Image (tube, rainbow over all chains, first blue to last red; front, top):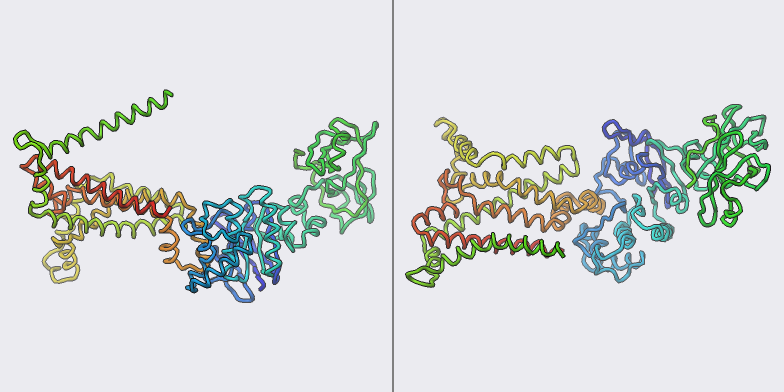
Length: 352
Length: 264
């Protein structure tokens, strides 16, 4: 079952939520809509669910135009950001709600509910009420409920954002496992890049209602299509560089160019993990700040010529590379992306 | 510890304030100097002419008011919440108006409206309608007037109830699972609003059981009007009636709040 969004436009008053969004989601694929709040990712999902109607454009599910089909007659199961279980029904009746609406016999409802609860790891929880469950368990039940009708499409609207960090990671892995097992076409809306990168087949990065890039996670991370993607996914250093032929000069190093450069004076985009830091008494930079993150430590380094650069070093080197230390900074030799020159060399994000 | 003492004192004072007059009232109805202890006053109520008739009439009016006020307020509240949150202050103001306008104004207004129309209209369905809603046995016009009066209370109870549930998400979850709008309203929203609906119903009923001005001035003998007419020259009877109607209201409150609590 494919889902196609064709030229979706939607505005609320003066705010444009979707600005001509076109995208095709393939059969059995898990696609993540990623972007900052207000980028239109949730509106796009709600257009697929039928809770929003686009001003112009169309939504196709499995080749059929569903743009004007009311929400209760679309074949899409949804899990919401806030806890959405019916408080007056127990877990089993929540899961079987859709079957109940369709007047299926009691036996079938109960056996299907039991089967699904087993699937999400909550077998035997059928008699409990939502308020007796933890947040993570409630979202599992919501997932089972969304799957009970065997929908063509599964829609996940930031289903993990209300949960604790640990539960969040477990549940997202479980969602992925289920999705692969059932082979169900899934749209996963999130503002958390780590979440998007870790579970999706493809990540669609949205900004101001437009698609910035849609690609597999590794590609989005390594080869961001636009400066916005580079900035939003992961952290990027913008370093001043000068293009000469097929290479770009930065920090006295000549690195091969990845793609065409936008001019001669450019920003070279470098991930913090591609910056090497070595202590040197006569170094041309010194460490301003260090924030320890377990497996790595992120250093903020002041350059002699002005400007700063962020560098990720292995966590065990955090003690050796303390703030105040004079260091040398080099870049890992590999092709680099460039962007039009914007700043001297200032990453926007603070280190801590 | 000072807090505890303070709380007890407050509770004590409030208790005395409410209970002493009540206890004295009860005492007054069951004891007098010449006869001593007797339940005669309560017996006289039941045997007084028109007791059952007016009580049943008021209860029926109450039921009709409850149904109508819920049918008006609940869909309106949901529509505003889901579709036009900007209109909420407007709805709030409209539902407060009945509290501001004195009942006497309603009576004058309603009476004038009903008197309107000349004999030329006598044969029209409009006229027939005006006549039929003034039926002495079941005055629909009183139902309409009481719905207006009950609206502020019903609106506020329901609004509080709706605030406690995430209406939008519940509605969308149900819609997503294939539920039609009526199904959403009756099988998803109402069950989760039991206590709010119960308190809206109770307040509406209490209002109907206590409203005197409109009914009296329009010439209908509802229970409160009957109480006033029957007890005019029998002090003990009138107090016994007050105690009885208070007890009745309490009983209804307990029943309704019990019904509301079952959902939890």
